[in-house]
Image (tube, rainbow, N blue to C red; front, side, top):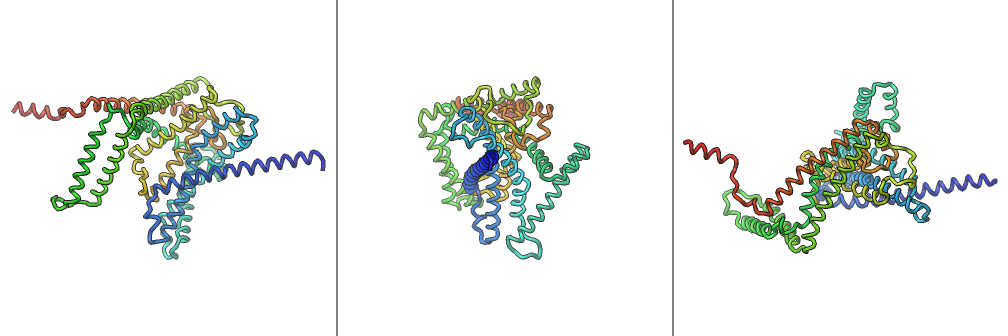
Length: 489
């Protein structure tokens, strides 16, 4: 063999080893996420649904739980996708020739983006509808009972749903873009239909983030205030402990003497209320035993960090709005062959990249808080060891929609200059200036409005409570009119 043949063989062998290494790394990362999500879901599932007398229902619920675990792992991977890419780019810039990070390259990052896009399509379009229909199915009439009969019914329902969605998307594309070539391209199921459908779902996710994130940014202050110990000026723990003890004693007296009350009592409800009061009293005792540093320093620092992160997010979005008016390069267009480790995506270097990662995680947590705080989705909020299987499926679908839209959301708002890789950059609406501009302006306006309204109301309430003004017997607005009528009489 000639030297050229040996060189070609060595290149092919190196390429094969690189592909195997990337595959092993991807499998290890996904397996880790899968195990974490499985542990998380088992803490919220309702044990009665998995220990029923009917083994068939228990088997169906176990299969649906595994599908939900896969979907939640994909959602967590979508959340970590953009921060991991930003950090990897900075690491490659800082250590370009280090032997121990040769596995971290552009091919691996591109592969992870494509896998997340593929698994997101698979979970949203096939796995989650299959899990829902599978848990609700009972088998066709006249067929043999068993899991296989439920599988047949679920597959038929899934095929009908796929045809319905395919027809709706085809009609919508024909109405929006009255072009024969665009309609015929929908017949290409893999190359056009799935990315087009996922683009519509991602657009809905981005709109959902636009509504939930400002609400969550405002709610983060009250949620953090409940978790941390407030200073003595803002919280009277002794009064709360006394009230809790009095309520617990009253309920205990009711349980011990049920015949002393004229009305029928729900003993199970009273026991649950007593347990809730006991848990609340234990938490109040822990808060009372907190150190002075934790009491007087932790709460102000947490509030200051939240205010700083929220203000920084609004400032970055405002700057991005100005960039959109001046420079066309600020549009969030994706590219297919971006090379990592060449240039930093932040003007502040590694420090700016860390700030970008922190802001992305902060906005994602805020969007989840806002999602579960909104009146429309409050009923989906999972409960510890008391979440039904259908509710778990709904939560996994919503979290996947939010997390898969996070890269597009972050790039659209200008939180990072990292270009969208893979099929995430193929969304047509990302190139529309009016949509991107109005989206940025709406986010900045809604966030500022929610923050000012909620923050000022919270500060006013805390000041009223601190000075004891809430205990004053203030007159009710309807009473003066009644007194005037009495005076006339």
